[in-house]
Length: 116
Length: 113
Image (cartoon, rainbow over all chains, first blue to last red; front, side):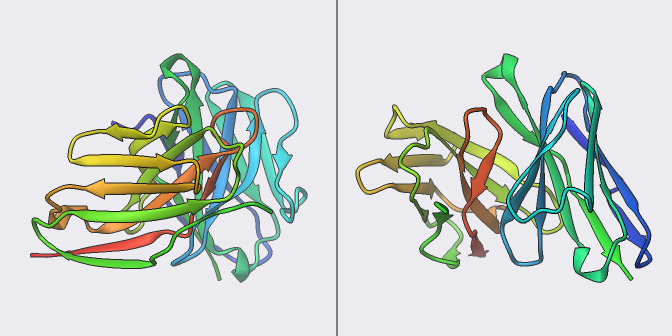
């Protein structure tokens, strides 16, 4: 079964609104989670590193005020796309590594965001 | 910046053949590499990994080879099956903590019955 779960799997929102995507580690604690974005027929691009109890670390070119990341507990990180535009439509994927299992990296099933 | 790339964007094989997917990386400091399979609309699925202190690792029907001299990584799939059809990505672990991955561009593998 899934080790890292994302919700929702698909979401449609109107331009200018905000949408939140959740990433949960189901049976382990993840002090660090990662958010990736994948446009159709392209590779995954790291957006940010989500750190429990502290600020996220964003990759160059990723707007921190637009992509708000909150890692309020050891099993949950959220990505909020604020003031969404059609160009934000993408596949958003999170991952977490499990230190007690040799740092095995688990990916969520992804969340499709469509901004209309 | 440094990146991971793939030589071939598409690969078509017949069922039962062996498949080889290649990947070039440029960050000589990377010490951990992973191959992922991604089916349409789904998240990446772990296939096999290798650390930089190894040059070969085998799994079930898959083998990963690492050549640090030329910074090359390959994934070999034995007796390829139609269910193996997917996009395959190599990824290298960057940064000082595990999990921060840089992905290659991906190779589309199509297996014909």
